[in-house]
Image (cartoon, rainbow, N blue to C red; front, top):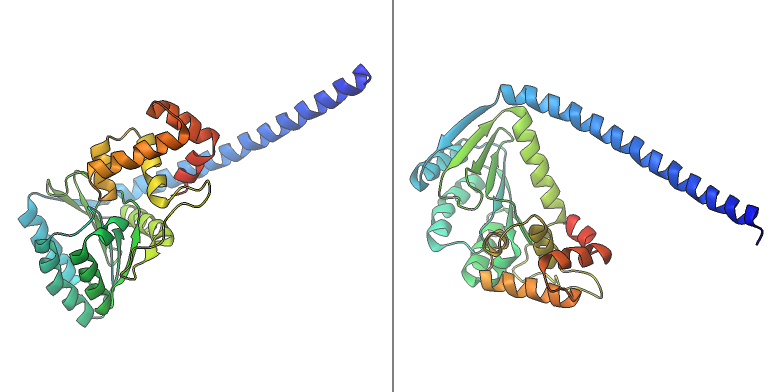
Length: 271
């Protein structure tokens, strides 16, 4: 091939790459400007937000009962922590019955791991019989309740919900919590009493594997990952070891690199 023809093709390819990069930068500038605008609006709303701090399980329980009794239209919940304890199940029943009688729409998201506990499965069946809409997902960020899109309750420590809680008010904060809930709700699976089919197919990762890969990428320990998935530390380590074996990696850093090369990291980010 003549050098001028080959060089012309090479320059054209580089020009196309440059144009594509310029477009990416322009898109990034637009996203940054949009983020700054959203941040400024949120900051204005936060200045008028009200934060109430709760200490101890008893104080948290009493305040949640008060908010539940005042709830008029809808309640959203993230039920993190995996299988529910017997005291928790018993304490929630009167509140659930009261909400059902008053026609409050309840949507709850539990972890997939609840299917490993027959008592929790039976409890979720009972909630559905009361009219609750229940779904499950591989991982949840923390416990959360949102009452009437007006009050939000979050733990002060996402890894220890008994340490304390915050009751939040303010349009900017509540809108963000509701948006988070809706995003997770869209990807969750309706609870039917049986464990959902979440096995991987071909090169695909299962939702639980995607969640673990994403959480490990955030630098979380095995103990924290296990809590977020509602499984034992041993189970979390077993899944992690299986992922590393499939990737042929000797370290988590190497596993992260190979996961990115195979497109697994992108799958994990989509969870």
